[in-house]
Length: 238
Length: 96
Image (cartoon, rainbow over all chains, first blue to last red):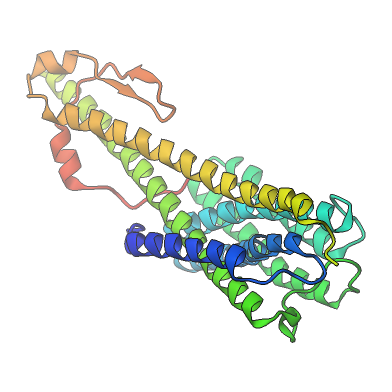
């Protein structure tokens, strides 16, 4: 079910990732202010955008789950959030590296962009204990979906709030002027964003396929044991 | 004038890209390990279905299997008729 279209997406991911790396290191010009350090931008920002979109997508899938009662939507939501948290970890680490190189500090607590992303990240870290502390699968799916929707709604609100906040150190990338990027930089950034999106979709499908196979196997094993029990009981009664 | 000279900046840039690649590699490795475990379990089930039915003697023989954690366990029951179960296909899934 989930593996449909996996191969072309995986191939596109590899091609776009290779193209993105090529553009980053051989095509995009060096930034006049930051120099070579600015190359971190091409991995850090697409990762942040895809992670935040993944959180929102998880919320939308959770809405679908609550509306339809189809638990496969809950699993899609769970995997999207799981992957977004992994990308979020990458965003925090690469951001800290960039901050150290550029500003001389690993972290700045008075910068709204950094702190707001950390809040979103920590909020979603709560998703795991919430989900796995509930044993009943129906309740687990329902409660997780409610959380995913509430947290998913918080992400765009948070984004807008940060836009409205005073800029202190961290630059705004998605501004009306496109962050004043020259054409080559913008093209490279867009290719990196597409590559990161494709990577997210590929990994999402991969994990979903693996989880589905694992669940089917578990169910099959259960059925085999049940059938064996029935057979043994029949033979004993004879 | 750039913030950092190229040799110093290169370490930070390399660090950021290595972190990204490592995250993806670790993730893919974990998924790969899970898929390998599933393949092993499928192979075990296929072995069970390939074994000929031997009636009462078979049900008295414990069927050895591995649980989700890969530990070997003995169910103490016969395998029954797994081919029928496999042919019937899976039920709608339950997440987790």
